[in-house]
Length: 409
Image (tube, rainbow, N blue to C red):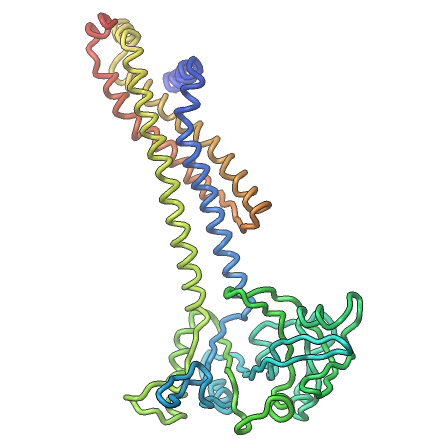
C-alpha cells in the first residue's frame, strides 16, 4: 500500500513538471468524458420528454378507427367509411382486462363568443373518453350522463380556446358560445395538456356530449356511427392481448371473411412509445459513438506522451534499476502516471459534462436528466483508457536494459 501511495505521489510530481503538456494530454479525455455525459443527459431527457408527451394521451390506451373505402379506384384514408359504431365499442368493453371504453366524433368548426371567434376542433364524446384520455378540469364541472341522454347543449373548452375567446381574467364558466349558430353553455374549462408527440396542440379543442354532436351539430348517416373508439387496458402487459382480442371480435361482428382486409384499424399506445423511444435511443447511441472517438484520441495522446517520457527519462530508469528497482516497479510507475492523467482528465470531464448539460437545458431549451450512473461509467471508462493505452509505454520502459539505459544520452 505504501509503495502504491509513493508511486502516485511521484507521478503527480513528475506530471507537475510539465503542466502544459499534461493538460494538453488530458484534453482528449476531458472532451470525451464531458461529451459522453452531456449526450447521455440530453438523450435521457429527450426520452423522458417523449414519455411525458405520450402520457398526456392517456394510460394504456388502445384506439380503434373506422376503415377506408375505394371510390372510383381511389382509396380513402382512415374514417373514409362508416364501419365503426358505439355498439361495437360497448361490446369490446366486455373483453378481459379492459377497464373502460369510450368513443368520439370530431369536426372542425368555428366557435363564437360575443365579438370573438376561433376555428377549432369540436369533439362529441362520452364520459368514458374523458376518463381514458385523462382529461381533467381547470374550472367548473364535466357534463354528466344526464346531459348525454338529453343531448344537452353544454360544452367544455380547452385552454387555447379559452385564451382566444375570452379576455384575461374573464370567467368562461356559465358563458354562452355558439357552434354553427347553436348556443352552448360553458360548464367547464380543461386543464392544459400542451403539445403531443406529433406537435399538435391538445388544448385547441372543445368537447360536447356525443348525442348532441350527432343530432344537433355534426349530423350522422345513422345514429351510433363514431369517428374513433377508445379502450383502456388494466396494465401495459395486457395491451397486446387486448389489441388482438379487439381485432378478433370486430372481424366477427363485421362478418369479415378470412381472405378480406379489416375494415378498421387498431393502434396500440405501446407501439407509439416503442417507436419514439427507439428513435431517441438511436440518436443517443450515434452521439455517444461520436463522443467516444474523443476518448480514443485522448488515449492515443496519453500513449504518445508516455513514449516521449520514456525516451526522456531513459537514464533515470537506468539509475533506478541500478539501485535495485525491479521491472514491476518501473511498470507500475508509468502505468500509474497514465491512470493519473486519464482519471484526472475524466474528473474534469465529468464536471464539464454536467455543466454542459445544465447549460443546454437552461439556454437551448433541451430537456436533460443528469444520471450519476452515467457519470460513474464515463469516469471509470476514462481510467480504463489510461490503463489500456499506458500499458505499452510502461512495458517498454520496464524492459529497458539497465546498462544501455545508463549509457543513453
